[in-house]
Image (cartoon, rainbow, N blue to C red; front, side):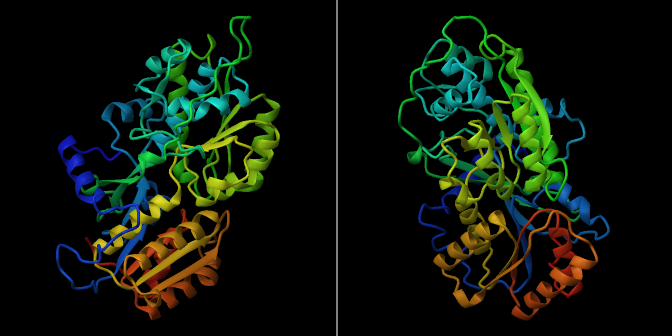
Length: 453
């Protein structure tokens, strides 16, 4: 996504990756051997707000995001991949979760081909195995050929690079981009670093079951995807790259011959960043014989629709729902995700804050599965890294579909800003979606402003 030279990428991964250990953040409170603590205020963000499209919501506040750092699941995306995604949507300004969306479609298609069936139950049985076999294939065409031939293979694509799925159906390892906003409220690509997280040893080792689908008795139904991603609501600004990448994957699968000799179909839908909107879209998908649902965008929305999707016996793969709660959620073995769980992102965020030398931290989070889970994860990791519990402040606000810039600023965000000012934290982490712009404005109005980068 934020392309850098191969040498720079390797250096960044090596330098930062050493700081991320399986046990937490370690002793990274010191920065470059300096034991002094930070006195300047710095803003930090997470995958819900670290995007150029978020900065567009603050056009009336020049440079207000300058110096803000944060993380998002991100691998170094090639110029070729970005070009292909933009061929689907030329207006893209971000590629957040593009790799995860592309891979979600691809692994489902490969699972259908490997199992010789587009039935959801068969796809679910094969889905983990197509990421954990013996022989690496890194293109759709090569992997489809291996699947058709009945060979043992493992897909290594855009986001699934280091290792495959765990037995819970989620990445065993991942990479995060450490992003920095510049003075124009956009991501400064030159400062992007890449952090490895997770453990390849947690990859599932069980062999995929043998194919038991159609073995030559004529063509069955075509594989059909339903895209349950945000077009409206608080995550609408994150939707375009996900839609574009998912549709690119369908296009390239069809160019490679399709699945089981037929062209793959796709139907778009809106999750609305809202359970009710998402549930209505799911019902439409079920009526139109969708076998695999790609989505939802948010963890809370995913949790709301998984029971209905599982009841209908359909496969659901989210490219961006990261809540740790989803790892053990009762999904009847039908929910998967190509985005890593928040326990990995929490360690990455905590490491950044510790490396910057902060000892007093405020976390402002939306009160839902995503916000509460990630906030608690970061808090736990920071305390484990040496920050005193009394130097941690966690403030939550009501999670809503839409926020009124005036009414909610007065009711929700101005009081929070006042508490942060009184607490005198030097690191302020925002865990939210597009409403984080209102949080920033409230903090600035209270006299809390990060120094320009």
